Every structure is written in C-alpha cells, then in structure tokens.
Length: 479
Image 1 (cartoon, rainbow, N blue to C red):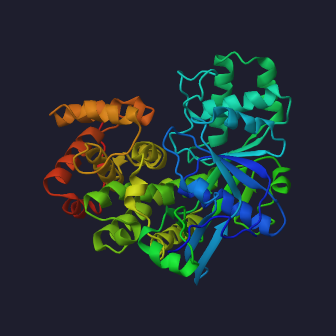
Image 2 (image 1 turned 90 degrees about the vertical axis):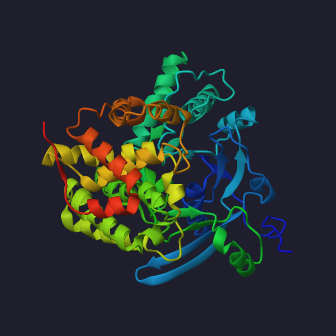
Image 3 (image 1 turned 135 degrees about the vertical axis):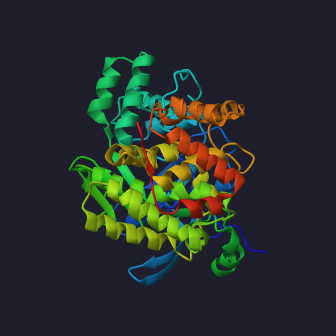
C-alpha cells in the first residue's frame, strides 16, 4: 500500500521559521503563497514558512496534521510554447491553526517576532464588516474581526506591526481591509494609541493575484501516486502561469524578494491597470460561463472551450462586450485576452465549472456588473451576453437546477424572492437587493424585461438553444 506523504517518509526535507501568517488553507493559496515562498527558500532569499489560519468554523481536515502540512503542487500546462510538467513537495507551510478550537494558540501568533507578513484569501465576501463581532468573541466571526483581535494583542505586547497582503479579489482590497480594522478598533473602544500604532507600524497593501488552481486532481490521483511513490490527500493542481501585483512602498521588494527569485511579481505604485485587465478579462468570462455551462450540462472550462457554441460565446463576450469597455491600451488588452483563451484551453488542468460557480453573486458583482453598468452608460444598450449570463445565474440560484453554494444572507434573499410566481416581481426584488449587489439595479433601463425574457427562454427552451439565439446583437435601452 502506498504510504501517506509526511516528514517521517522524508526526514531530510527542510524546515523554516514561521515568517508569514496566512488566513485561508484552501487550494488557491496553497498553490500560490507557500509555493512562491518555496522558490525564494530554494535560493536562500527568504528562509521562512507560512502558518495557516482557518478563517471559517468548519471541520479541520485531519490530512494537514497527518501529512505534517506537506503537500504536492502539480503544475501542468503550456508556457512559452513549451510543455511544463512539475511536481514539487511544498515544505514552506508549517502548521494549521483553527481559532475556533484553539483561540489562544491563534492569539499567541502575536508573540512571535519572526512573523512579519500576513496574507489572506477568504473569498470576495470575506473582507466584510460584521457589527455583531466583539473583542470578547472567541473568535470574532469575520476575518477582519479576527485580524483586529490579533493586531490588538500584538500592539498590547509592544511589538512591531506587519506587512498585510490580502489576496481577495476585490478592488482596493488592502484599503478596504484597513478601513474595517479601523472600524472595529473604534467600535470596540481600543483607543487612539492602538489606532496610531495601526497606521505607524502596519502596511496594508492592495494586491492582485492571478493563477488558475483547480485543486485536488481527482481523476489523475492514482496515476500521480504511482508516479510520485506516495499518497497525498492535499495535492493541488495548478497551471504554470502566475502573476502577483503588489501596490506597496518602495522598500517592500527588498524585504520580500519575489522578483529576485525570478517570479512573475510586479511591485507598483498603482495596480489599477493590472486589476481591470485581470478581473474583467479572466475572472469575468469565468463567472459568465459557469452558470450557463453548468445549465447546459458541461463540467469543465476545457470542455466548454471545445464546445462549438460556448467557444463562440467566450470569444464574443471578450471581443464585443469586455474589451471595448476597458479603457486601457488595446494592443496589451488583446494580447492578454489571447493569453487567457490559451489558458482556458490548457489540456492538463481540469478547472471545474462547479468550483468557479461557488459564491457567484459576489463574483458577478465584482467581475461583470461594473462592465454591464459601463456598457449601458456608454452605449445605451444592454450587453446581450452578460445579460444572458446574469439570467442564468438567477435561474441557478432558484435551487432546482444547480447546487447553490453561497452565504446564508444571499440564499435567504433568493429563497424569499423565488416564493413569488410573478416573474416581474421576482426580478424587481432581486435587482433592488443591496445585500446582493451593493446598490439598487432596478432603474437600469430594460434590464428587468431583458432578464424576464432570458429567464423564460432558459427555462422553456434550455440553455443551449437560448445561447444560440443570443449570440450576436445587443438590447437597446429605452428610457
């Protein structure tokens, strides 16, 4: 029987002092931050590891302890017209702490002077304020609440602050996180000295991350175990491409020598161009294709890109509705769009549409809604394909076609709205919900009628037939 990966199996693997706190132990982060730290460690540039913190109150996988937090990153794909096949045991993750079972152990991280960086990926909905959180909670429910409690303990100990690098895919993520931490500091009465320490000793950076990580390679697991000679339940598959854009002070590249290690990391004074390009041209198509593809019975991005109808959908979506709305240099945008389509076609990485569909409401709000609004403002027309994907998303959240995975607050809105048999009333309730979108969308000309028609067609003739009818054309907005 194949042995389980652990340090008893490989006693000579290196160990490093903990220098980074990482909120989130999911697939993406394990193939992103610890993987990059490992590349620096191998070159003697960092010599540090990540201590992972579980941000949610869900069961802790026993695999992290059984495997001593060792896991394999499997990289397959095309880079520079060359096939890339890499397998690497990651040794730069030290342990996993759950604040829900060991809150004092979590707060004890504040005592370690070696820890100087904090990263996070708690999904787009993770950087959010919860007015119910208090300092006496063990722990506060929100990620910013937990972070505030940790920072306050650090302050009380009289120690230096952190460089904080959130990886959640929301605009100005570092600034937003800092605002919520300061709000908790005020609400909890933590005092002006703590607020001054937050500003003086801590650096909140806005960042952008880009890497397609598909998680545990279930279909290839047996083959990979034979190849590697061990069993790895934490194995994670990724594409070769990686980009991390960090907006921070000029001294940061020296303290975090990612570029020196040869990684595709950009330190910049303004990441707006990079963010718009990535969020709208890579994540936008992902979100648009997920509900439509699942409703059509497709399972993966590669399968969708090989489909005659959906490959046209993705190309028209990018060329006709996304690219024209991005006010950036067109040659660079077109080159990036070509790279994205190539990455979508990667035959070595199975990116499940079901994984992309997770928390789709916040993803649509971040990735596609700004383009829809800009399209209406600039053309007085609704973008036909984005609108159809919007309708497919609403249909999926009815719950009888697709498995919904979102926050209770989001699902409560849909459950209440879907009680009505009046399509117009349902859509008005949904569009007016600031819980879902952060603003009232009901005044967008023709959007209610367009969504009603698309929902009816998706329901009556099916997703593929509706898509074929929608390819090409726009909906004119009449005031």
